[in-house]
Image 1: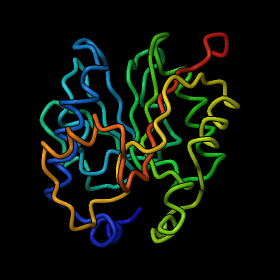
Image 2 (image 1 turned 90 degrees about the horizontal axis):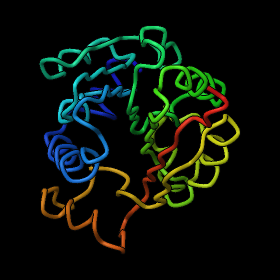
Image 3 (image 1 turned 135 degrees about the horizontal axis):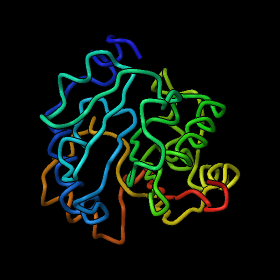
Image 4 (image 1 turned 90 degrees about the vertical axis):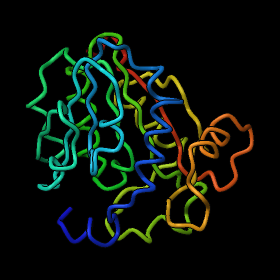
Length: 215
């Protein structure tokens, strides 16, 4: 994506930092050991990786300007997501990607998954957060950079077809976008996370790990 995408469709928004700081503190951090190595793919403004506590943090994005948004201590790599040679084999404990794989082809996604099978440690996991087409079909292609369609069912099938075991599926994890009149506050986000009812929930969360014999 070029700079114009980040100036228009994905402009910097202080509410995004509130959202991700709360999500990390009250959901994701408990899954990340203090000694872990964390890799975020498509890190953008770095709101996830900046808030993570871990021994080592690595961020990737193809946007040339993204390193200037990263917190001290976060390693950066500018380049395509399907070229992961900069990551050592058997070195990553937790891979995270938010709103990324709908922007690339299935062939590129499969290449990423194949490479991550080597990069992840035996107990390492891949966590994906992205639009669920089943619930977001009206808005899905409002983003002109979307290339590929996934629902919570199809993405799990795709992961399994590429030798991953699906561990967690949350079809309605979060609302689709910050572009609404809803207030973004830590207390409301925490209530949403624990609520069994997910109004406007159009983003899914999927966690998986490589099938061991495929490593």
